[in-house]
Length: 168
Image (tube, rainbow, N blue to C red; front, side, top):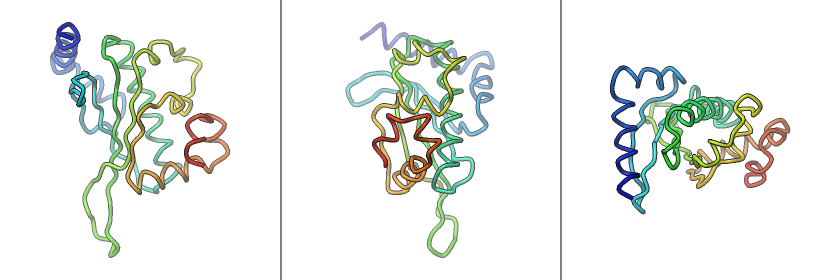
């Protein structure tokens, strides 16, 4: 446990020193924040927050997020394989029923185990196929709508059949 905590501390220090954050931020323009944190069981992980590129509540949002998660996971897995897992949150700008801005809200989150990410042949896997490895997927009603619309598309089912089997 102590060695995991020290490893996470080292990762956070390395991500925040010597201009390294700029490198992770360059992986995706949709990364709004990232930090080392721990879950309720005390397990350390890296949390990466993504902002939806444009809210359509469906295929385009999750397609963009998939690409961002793929690029970020690939980057982190190659540089910091000691992190037990990565958790992504996806936020979207919301509007009320009068079409006024209602602020940004987290609509979807999912985790990827580093043990899976280290096995990936990154040159042969498609970004959308990474969704099949998602763990602990959580969502609100907007996130659920996004998942259902994404998985209603035949191409989405082709690239992420295991993932989409849960949302059809």
